[in-house]
Length: 514
Image (cartoon, rainbow, N blue to C red; front, side, top):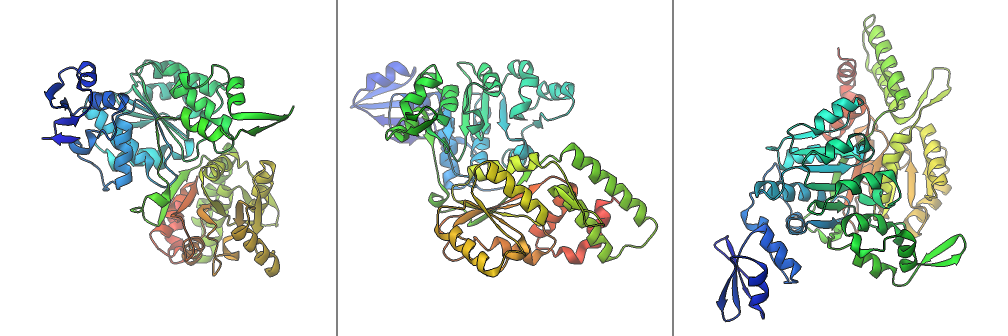
C-alpha cells in the first residue's frame, strides 16, 4: 500500500471489484492495482473490508497542534480512533490517551466528519485532565464545562456554541434533552467502567443519546478488571449485536455457577471479553518507550458542603486575626496547616480533639485511581487521623491495605514493606510521608497518590522517589488530589521545586487575599 501525493492510496489486491463496488470514484488500474482517495470514509470502508494496515489520513494531513509534540503511540492511537466510529481505547493510565482523543476529534472536526464533541468523564478530571488537555492540544477550539449547581446555567452551557462540552456522568440526566438536541455526533466516554451495569439510570440515559450514526469512543486503562461480566454494559453501548440482549445470558457465556451465591470465570472468558470489546487499541506504559519515566497528574476533588463551610469560616477568622497582628512564619505555618487539615478531612482543635468531615468525594476519586492502576498503589496522607479513616473505608471495600506511620515499630515496618514488595497483598500502602520518605524501596507500586500536600519539598521529593528507583520495571505516575485553593498553591510550589517553608508567609497572604 502506497500513499500517492498525500491524496490517494494505491493498493494491490486480489479482488479489485470488491473495492471499486464499495467505494465510489475508486479506480481499477489493472494488474490488481486500485487507486482510492485518501479520506476518512474511504479508510473506514477499507478497514471494514478487512484490508490490513490502512493508514488514517490524520498521519499525512493533520498538523499536530498544541504545546507538546505527540509521542508515536499517541499518533497511532489517534489514527486508530479516526477510522473507527465505535471504538475502545484501553491504553494504560499515564500514556496520554486523552490527548490522542483530542487530536483525533480535532482532525474529524477539520474534515467536517463531525460537528460537536461531548466528553463524559469523572468529576475529578473534568478540568485538570480534559479542559487542560484541550487547551494544550487544540487551543483554537471553543470548550466549556457543563458543571454548575444551577440546572438552568448547565443547560445554557450545553446550548452554547462550544465545540467541546465536558460533563460528568451524573450530570447527564439533568440535561439529557439539551444534549439530545445539541448536535453531538461524537461522544467520548472516559473511565467507561462506570457504564458496566446496563441496568443503571446512568447507562440508560447515555444509551438513549447514541444514534446509529453517533461516533462513540470509550476509554479506560482497566477494562473488565474486576470480573468478565463488567464488559457487558460497555460492549452493549458500542456494539449491541456482540452481546446477548439480557445480562443473564452474557453471564452464562463468561461465568459458571459454583453455588447459588457464587460465580467463577470460565476458561474462555478472556477470549469472549476480548471479542465483544472490539475494535480496540491498547498500549501499556512498558510499550511506550518514548514516555518519561515519571509523570505527574492532578485530580480535582469537590470539597463537601461541610468542608467548604468550615474552610471559609476559618479563613475569615484568620483574616480578622491578621489585621490585628504581624504575621510570623510560625503562626502562618500553623494556620495554613489547619486549612490543609480541613481539606483532607479531619482537623485537630486546640484542645486536642479531632473534628471529622465527610470525605466521600475525595475517597471516590482515590478509588478511581486505585481501580485504574495496573500495579500496587501508595497513598501518602499527611495527617494521622485520616489514615485511620482511609484504612476503614478500604477494608470495607475489600481492598487490602497496610499502614505505615510514626507509631508503627521498626520491626513491623520492615515486615509490612517486605510483604508489599514480595507478596500479592497488601495492594495499597497508606503512608504518613515523614515515616517512609527516605531510603525505602517500594517498586512493587508504580502509582503514588497524594491525599493532600506536605509543606516540605524534601519530604515530597524523597517520598516520590520510593517508587522511582533502581528495580522499578514500569513507568511511574504521581497523582495529586486537590480540592481547595491552599492545596493548589502548595502543590504548585512543590512541583516548581520551591521550598514552601521559605515562602510560607507569602503563601499565607495569598490564601487570605491580603
